[in-house]
Length: 181
Ligand SMILES: O=P(O)(O)OC[C@H]1O[C@H](OP(=O)(O)OP(=O)(O)O)[C@H](O)[C@@H]1O
Ligand SMILES: Nc1ncnc2[nH]cnc12
Image 1: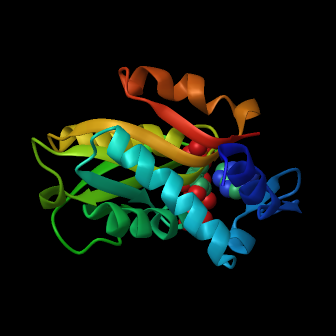
Image 2: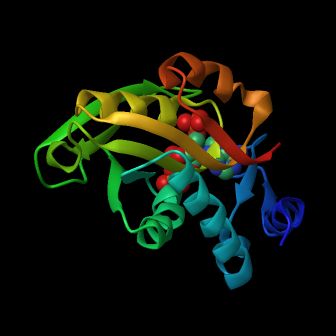
């Protein structure tokens, strides 16, 4: 399949849900994509190629939808998967990072022992919106001593300015969005 055909297939499997989870938000629902094995496999293939191209040695997935997309990429690429979770879920010793959302703040965590110097980490998630979650994940990766290989997302909501917010934290690492909206 050509790159354009893959993008069209993926876009056709993302459903817009108006006013979810609150009025005024158009929620980008990826469950139709996950339910279509051809589309899910195509997306996994795109991420796996980026993983190889950026020389990643570990994959971080961002809870929760990022877990679903990142795990098959790690298996396909033959490298480890590391979950970045919302605070309070991981049982071991963690590093924790607070970040700002559109309204209020949130915190995410990673097991400190899962990342170390010498790791090159590709972050995978479904959506880049304001960029707050991805930015905080890059802080965690570096605080663990690892290097950021890149950030890969299925879709970027350009009108929310996530790319500009993330730019300084990327420090030259690539941010790739399969679909720009
Ligand atoms: O760029 P941002 O403004 O930080 O937003 C993007 C994040 O928001 C969504 O996750 P959410 O926190 O809704 O969690 P979920 O995947 O568990 O539904 C999405 O999956 C990203 O992780
Ligand atoms: N509009 C949106 N749809 C799906 N996930 C999101 N995360 C942040 N904004 C989102």
